[in-house]
Each structure stands twice: as structure tokens, then as C-alpha cells.
Image (tube, rainbow, N blue to C red; front, side, top):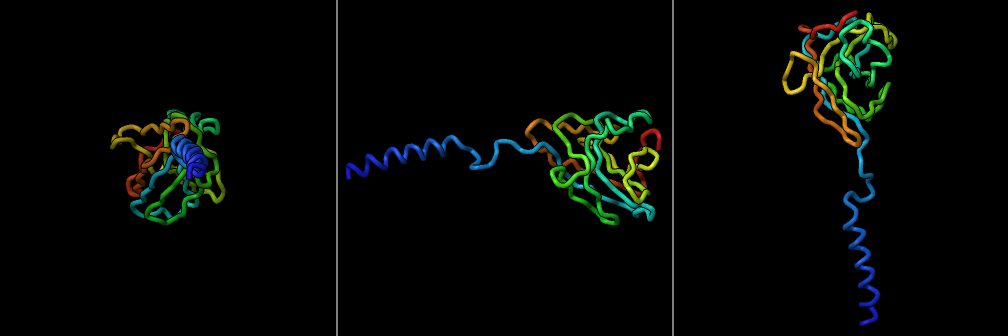
Length: 168
């Protein structure tokens, strides 16, 4: 019996040390930076819409020149047409993936073009992310390193669209 205690006691101590030093099993200690939320569509979908995306810009769109490839920091996967809501997660397929950072403008945009276009004239903003119910200015999206932000929700009302950025 004493021999068994000599063997089991060190094994139990090692198990306790390993179990106490690990808080997430074999999971990594970080999340992939990103964000998720729901886009809600109200009103009648325009017949001419061919493409819909969630898009994130580094800076506000205050001038037509602010709409450029260097300012675009995320483009979601294509959102199906004609639906009433869409749950998205930036970790799912994205045309341009997002990184940790501070972003000034998150919107749902639509295009009438059959192929993805990065020309401002081809985009119409259908909805804007507003933080804390403040509909006077777009909400900032802040994604810390190793963090995933939830509830970045955007309402789109086709009968009452938001103000369009310059150049539209």
C-alpha cells in the first residue's frame, strides 16, 4: 500500500498542477479578432439590387476621395437578396477580412451591378451602424487585439434610407 501511495501521490500532484494552470483546455487563449451582429431589413427590397454587403471603413466618408481601397477594412460575404434579416460573423468567409483596430464607419451597402465594383457611384448605403441608439452619427467599431465584439446590429429601412456619403 505504501508503494502505491508513493506512485499515486506524485501523479495526482502533476495532474492538479496541469489542471490548475490551464483555463481553457486545449483552446487557444485568444479569439480571432472580429465582430458579429444582425442586419435587419425593413420595407420593400428594391428590384434592381444585385449585391448586398456589410462593409467597414477606417475613416468616415466625408469626401468622395474617402471612398477608396485603402480606407476599406472589411467586406463581408455576399448577403442574400430579399431576406428580412441576416446574422453575420466576420470570422466567416469575407472578401476582405478584418483585423483589430478602431473603425469609423460600418454600413450595409448595396449595388445594382452584376459584379462587385469598388467605384463609389455603384454603391448605395442601405443602413449604418449606430452605437447606443445615437442616430446622429455613425457608431465606432472598436476591436481590441484578441477580442471578438458582438451585437454590431444594423437596421436597413428601404422606405427611409440613411443619408448617403458624398459621391453617390
